[in-house]
Image (cartoon, rainbow, N blue to C red; front, side):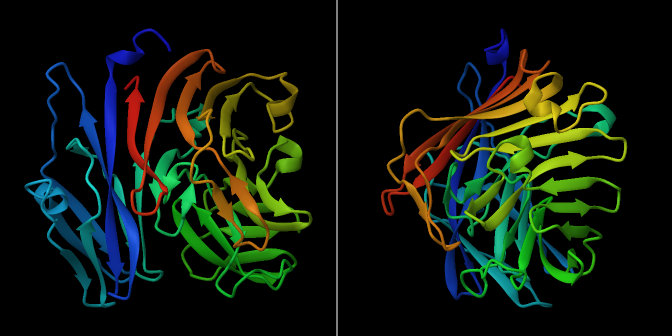
Length: 367
């Protein structure tokens, strides 16, 4: 580790909550918080959290106190919190599922309720430096009750972006009759075909153009940025989740701005990822594998050496997907890997009820 990296250490504790939508089903939710570690081992707690509910018509602000979320006594049950929209009759109830041993400072940066889908998500942003022309990858841990058990435990993941076949009608047909869903920038869009491989969002306001050539996806936003999904044959990775000719999901592989600055994201079968950007002038996707060009910034993940007890198995796409590893750290480098700028280490515990992996803490070095 780079000298001086231990000078700034912040620890993020994760406590899991339960969210009940429309009082009809239960989903596991999470409340993320940060501990500031100092010599006196003091812990600073933010007093309040401001939550915004967006039902598509109006925003309702609800202030939630620290005691509301963790209870005045850790052994107490957290009082029920209701957030209600008279326009959509959307409500949620939050109660405690588990509390970590420490009481850390609040770190919720984006708590979002989507009334149209009945889902909730939370984001913990991680540090990623801006590159040439302001190009930057959106890096952060996100929680969604729909995600299931992944390489960061139940519900947690790192969402660079993806396009996948919808499961709303069961296992896909794996042809053009399937409905496609795009996840970009924290928003999810259902796509509708408009002919000759072109698609657009079913809901107005996305301002994005989608093109599918039968193998990969190309997306353009209103600022002129272009996003490429599923470039596994070029980046030599696993950016398409597939079995034979059947492709279920295409992961974001490349971002290119109007000035020709690139961000490359490689996804590997074991769950690892690698991000590189701000290359030498003239750098393109072919330089990533050739090793002939250097990139100013690199972000990589590292897996635990030992296998997890709760091996991930999935057949929802119609074919077998298995992973027995978990991410143990994420590192941010400058100078093409010469200088370590940030490092995040992850800790886990197994649920006593389900045996699934729960993300319990995230420690940041170098802040």
